[in-house]
Length: 370
Image 1 (cartoon, rainbow, N blue to C red):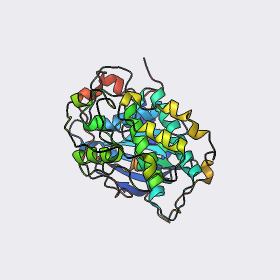
Image 2 (cartoon, rainbow, N blue to C red; image 1 turned 120 degrees about the vertical axis):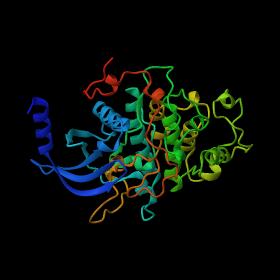
Image 3 (tube, one colour; image 1 turned 60 degrees about the vertical axis):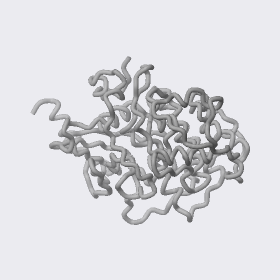
Image 4 (cartoon, helix red, strand yellow; image 1 turned 135 degrees about the vertical axis):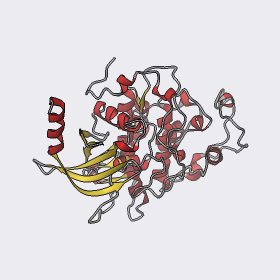
């Protein structure tokens, strides 16, 4: 046994799989524990043998970016080991996700609670963007919640770095209800603004307790968006009619956000509106959002430990949307029935590799390299 195999065997023995808590097309998730301490973890077993070309790119991305991102509002990857033809990711165990919180009608949200969840979302996202990483699949069930109430960004299978400008990226990312109109129009050059649009949709959903822009197809998604926010003009969004997949969708007047979000404060609506600006370059950044007056005005954000949370049953299957193995964007595992019915697979185009070498993608070291 060589040194690599020995090290892998030692890592494998460190972790014990207990109960299966979820299964998707390409992965099985177990509740597990650390053999020496009994600490609870989640172990995501990726079925490498399912892929014709070896290890799926989404698995590579997930490991790579989680190794690089260490932040209290990003899920922590504790270890990685192989077993037979499977790759196993050991992640911190998280109790639930924001979608389940939103859908639990027994819970009452205060404005301070929504402010707290949004602050943690923006903090995690700002850290990703500061490290030149786009998430590209932000939605409530990819925002996991720990036992202490901390919200953490999860599921980095569609993430990519954006340090190199001018490279094409796929527009087939982000679950449809949270996908910005520039991607629906086929834009292949984009940056952090795509994640900000998703956060805006999540912000609205927290206030409405139902998805804000639930389109049934890509075309219907555009119509749903324009009905809510008005059809963009060239003045609103210069050049959008020149995007590759642009089609006229119809003329809809802009409805003031105040008419739908009747209980929201002026600062709240101002921040929401800055997340949902059509022109991507004019959207607020995560860093700017954290400095927005909304987060400094009364009421102050709730402490994470005081946030409302579902009462977990004896055998929870809700946690870890990050780890339930769904590579279809609409999900097929527990706790994801409310997701949009688009069957987008995580097979990304060669353009989306951004011109970087495969060796760069396979570098799982702790630090980013120049």
